[in-house]
Image (tube, rainbow, N blue to C red; front, side, top):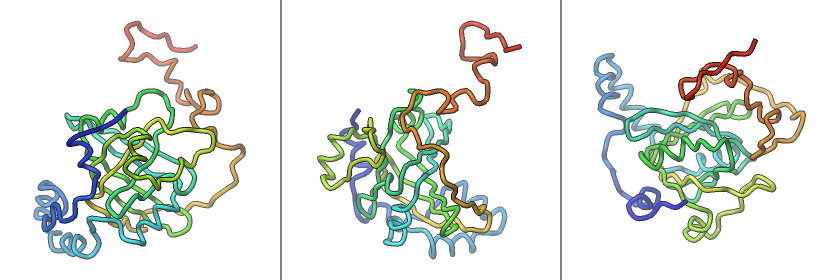
Length: 230
């Protein structure tokens, strides 16, 4: 799978683009006016919101083992998902570009399907253990196959998941990067895994694939009614 032409420009660095534009949406600014937080919001924009990843942000991302991903389709219908891997599975290509690999999953491809229709992406990195802080990264994404991405970024390391090859890469061009304060981030403690992660596994037990018993519940997406389990 490959994105070409105008889509590719979404992740290639274009210094100075959109400079001077106030961060946030018109709706965001309207609610600030309505609730009297405009000045406080402008201080946050001025002091905390960047249009690139500074060195501290890049180092933070390099240590993370998970990222929450938000996308939406051309109609604005939203999807959120989780991507995880060893530290460094999200690669910072340069101060305005990062990429993460997509491995074999359930075949739905909701996130990358949305990106095909609507390139806007929101990434949320949360450190529950060490720094107890979060980082928002918003921007525009494209889908590139491994060969094409390495042609543009020959120094890109191999995917960090042993024995697995990325089916494709999500490449995001950074438009906003800012802190998520630690006030409401729960503290968690790392524990040793009972067994190694099985990245890309089709084993239903290892994946917990029907944990919520959805197979035994009538589905609106099925042509035939399903019987619930007794």
